[in-house]
Image (cartoon, rainbow, N blue to C red; front, side, top):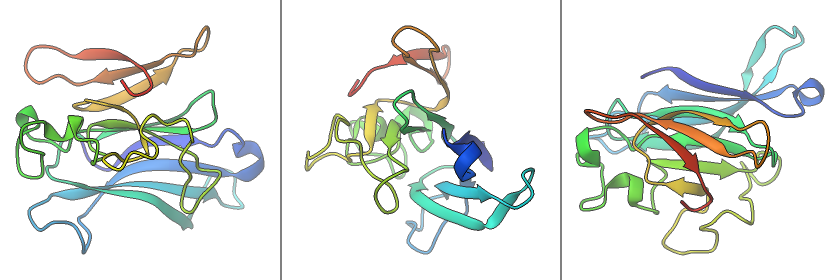
Length: 188
């Protein structure tokens, strides 16, 4: 549950050479002292060699402090709408109840945190990214506008249905007895 966890090529990669990665990084200078690490969502560009990334091109779009080492999530996927979807775990610890977790509701249900969520951002606008205007919690003071869906534990893989309504399916790791496959809905 460490290191490079996700990678997605921009829909226009053949023309722009942009791709995005989800990786676990060491704690930063502003990370709470009792937290374990950070999640980074970064943009890179291909080098002049089409088989090699330009490592100096990294542009960190989003950093999320992580309380524990596990429950990272890690999938990146461009939806049929052209926006980047990001699966983020609840930050670790059993029962979403440990250091760095919101008492009573956990991180998965706390709309002020990005942990335990499916995020949706526009990598083609804004600095460092834009918020799609139809994200469900845009303009709500008690919510992060990046949130597309909430209540996740460790949504480690996701895929869009290739036909029909292009539903988003997410594999969410369970705790003791069960794993879960969610059909993600806007604001759900």
